[in-house]
Length: 218
Image 1 (cartoon, rainbow, N blue to C red):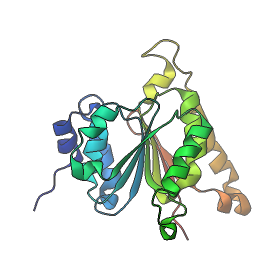
Image 2: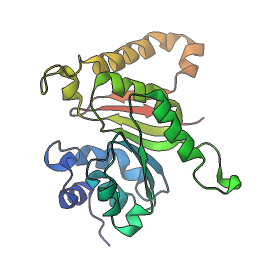
Image 3: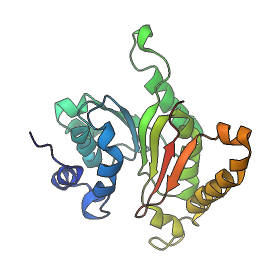
Image 4: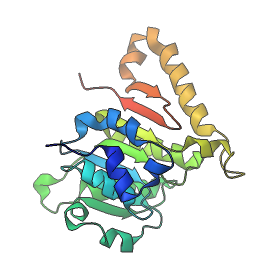
């Protein structure tokens, strides 16, 4: 049996991640080992739900949470029932810590069965929200502790933070932030105590995005 690639799924569902940004090839490499596992995923930004549908098809056992400041509930209702049962839409502003924390509380306490309550960390987080540096960094600071060991945190569309697409948007602060992270990690490498406390495995910048990987549990 042949399974569709993420590129094929995204082309069919019509998300701009495929036809505008060519992200699927990168994601296929990053996500293949997660594909059929019962992972938890968070995406910031819902729009018309095309991305959520694509990831719902690509990850058939995943629970997918989506945070959006103005979610399209009509688009959510149009999702196929099987996917809609695994996609949970949360209203909130990614630049407001209290909104993110409220979403995290909802994720942790979702099932009313007390035996199922507790921490709910994410294996994959994708920030495809407003693309403003300030909001991206607020989201990262709030959400990074809630990424599973070995998990991935991805920020898309970094070109907008340079302000070359829409005047006045951002000042490359997102890139500067993570480049400084790289400098600090390398600088602290000789200090065993600092090295052991650091939970970032790697930071890379493939094709207009930042990919931060969390260290595996020892």
